[in-house]
Structure formats: structure tokens, C-alpha cells
Length: 151
Image 1 (cartoon, helix red, strand yellow):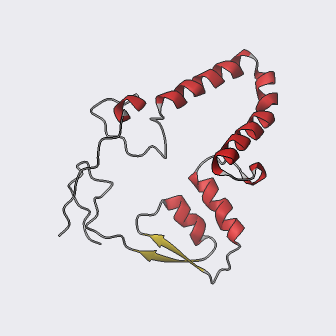
Image 2: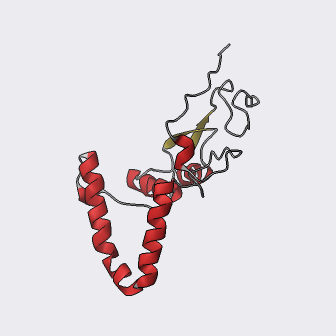
Image 3: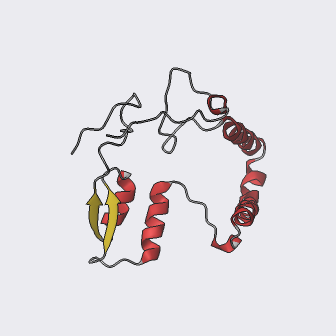
């Protein structure tokens, strides 16, 4: 039997977010609880847009190009190959379209897959779903030591 060990504390983790100490928010990918520096940058951009909406929105293409260049430099990639997407659903559909799957192709997903990502695959090919090990900690439980029920 596998013995679980609690993960190490993330350095300065609690100070990165404005969450209550009584909250264990594990769904950062869907909504809310962005890191403090991101929230502050967001507020600055909103204030800039409110101060001069025309100038703000006219500058967006150049700002996006500059951001793509910074990301590309960091990744060692071509800026023309970098695109920003709104969310995981949009990204999944773009990737699935780029793969040019045939209806008889097969995509492997896990039984813990994100619904809209699995749906993006299911729209384009047959799915083969594999179960994750039920001994793994369950992300829907409130305590780290609780287990998922076997399927």
C-alpha cells in the first residue's frame, strides 16, 4: 500500500493570494484567486482603459505583439508561432483542429479529464478513456489523506 506524504509548503505560497487562511481553493484554472501581482496588474490595466479607452484599445495589437515576443524569447520560440488564448477550452479546440483528426482516429483521455477538453476530443475522434489509479489522492476531497472511491 502506498503511503502518502503531504507536499512541501510552497515558499511564500499563502502570501501570493488574497485567500482566507480557512480556504483551500484548488481550482485556480477556472475562476478567481489570481496571484496578487496579477490582480494588481489587472487593476492597473482597468484604470488605464477607463482613463482613455480609445488609446488603450488602439494599443492592444502592439502590446500583444510585444508580449508574444517576451514569451517567445523566454521559450526560445518564434513570436509568430505564439498565440494567446482565452481559456483551456479554446486551447483544446485549437489543438484538436491542428491535429486534423479523422473520425476513426482515437484520442486517449483519463477519467479525470477536464470536461470541455474531453468534449473537444470527442467532437473529432473516438475516445479511449483510461482510469487513474484509485490510490491517488482525490482532488474532490477536502483532506489530503482521503481517497477516491474505486470506479
